[in-house]
Amino acid sequence: MPAKRPRNATGDSFFAWDGDTLIVNILGKPSASKDAIGKPKGTQLKVSVTAKPKDGKATDYMVRFLAPQFGVAVADIEVVFGQENVNKQLRIKAPKKLPAVFTQD
Image (tube, rainbow, N blue to C red; front, top):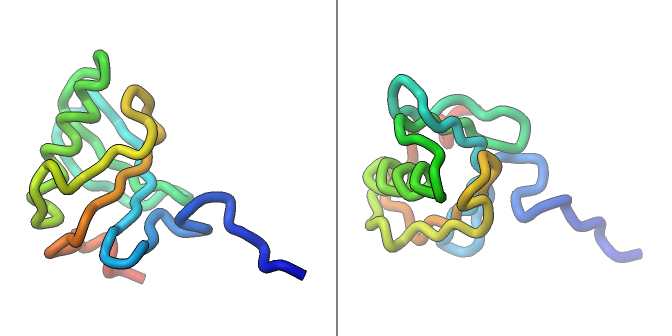
C-alpha cells in the first residue's frame, strides 16, 4: 500500500524543508498596525504587514519585510501561490537565519 501523501508540501506543520529550501505557508494580514511575524495558526504562519492589499502589493511588501528576517535577498523568496490572497506559500532558498517561531516547540 503506498504511503499516504500529505495534504500539502508542509504536511501538518506551517513549514517544511525541501533540501536547503524552506517552504512556508502564510496567513497574511495586510493593513496591520505594524509589520510582524506572528504565531502559527494551524498549518499557516501569521504574518502582518502595514501595506494595503492592492494588486498583490502587500505580498511584494511582505517578501521585502521577510527577506532580512531570514538573511536572504528578496530574489531568494518565491511566492508559490497566493500573490493576491491572504493564504500563500513561499519558498525561501537557503535561509541564513530563522525567526524564533521556527525554533520553538
